[in-house]
Image 1 (cartoon, rainbow, N blue to C red):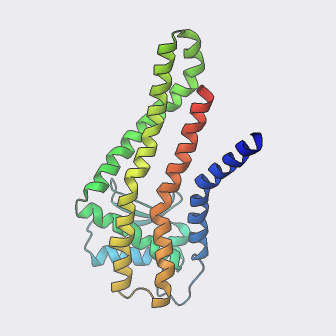
Image 2: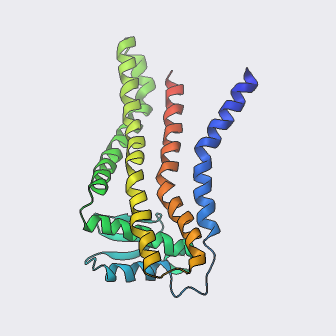
Image 3: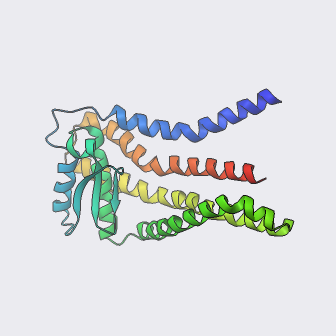
Length: 228
């Protein structure tokens, strides 16, 4: 039974971390310098912002990971994707501009995600405080029903982060395959031989939050186990 338990735990970890590894591997695989490309991811993003007349949208490098910030209307690209001509840089730049297009067109999914992200930031802080204080609270509150209620509250707070990641998935797929890929293909920004690789990068960009959701589930399960 112990061996089966270890195997099951190993399979669980693989299921959780394999998507994260695949995303990182795909980005790295297509991140090689392409001297045949006419520009960098940052230059393509700026070009697309101007082409689609996304007035007020900026393109900037960041250390915080590739993302679009609706609050400041800024496309943030990692240093490599911003300054190096690569298939990953070009595809990710188009993906993030896809989010800027969603924002400009009033996409309901993006708006919902932003509201949930703000809520999750608050609930994450509350959950962290709760779980740090939990051992003391359990000593003070001796009622089993009250303890159960407290545990359920803490777990619910953490679960909001998982919900945010799941809500994000259709928004990410829209940015990748209904915005970025048509732009890259119809605009002639890629050689036909590069389309398959671009699809892989765009899929990885869309699944980044799925990998995050799985890690969040692992953290949630870990707290449930600790508090049992």
